[in-house]
Length: 348
Image 1 (tube, rainbow, N blue to C red):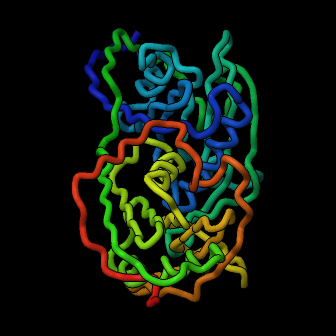
Image 2 (cartoon, rainbow, N blue to C red):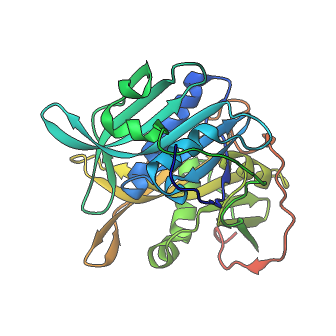
């Protein structure tokens, strides 16, 4: 039995679900893809745990729970939102012997319901470039088994809870660590909007070029071209709904000729495979999706933009785009006010 008793007060954060909770394969694939994006952008991943329910997950950082035995005990015992989680998942980094050497890996471990502690584990080696970009190597190694001792040593501590015990658990409503900060600006525009989505993406990319190089990006930028106007939606803080639903709700406020979103990313350069951070503009226009990527190089404390690259990605399949597609979740877009936006598409 544990020889110490202490009280923990933690805050869980509710997140939109990556994947379908009822489709185990789709859920795992969505989580792995999301983890790849996090590692690429951050050069690593914070150790956390996810408790999955229909339509959403509750996330808590492992460091908020103290030592590993306490975190493992919480991981096994937590039942939030008035129901038992459908899935219990831990994510993090570890050092793992691969072949004849120790490698840094990112991993995800799912503890399945049932006797004998059945589990699913996936891990993948990665490194970090001089620009702080996470580079994933090889492919995901996936294993399934049962029992703590059947896991590789670095991951046993993630679910080994014999040295700690949760004697009582009181939960409230989980919430984001910071509410979203949504700002909207609108301006009149004149001239004809190009028909090609990459040309629309280029307009946005050029419009915000100096801004993003000097100030950086908020969490998300959304632009909507409507007849005679251009709207700019800026999202900071924590977005409480899936990005796709937010963009669809914004586009659905009125007739939309084109929609573009702007976010940061990582890209592999075509000449030699160098990985660089980039600014991504994805635009929907005339039933097609186009993309503009602006590679960034960081040297001596300065950022330099390389020539942008373009790609017409695909035609928009019915029900999958942003324009004319209803959000699957309720999105409140009641404006608190307006800010002026200077600029235009072109002269008539």
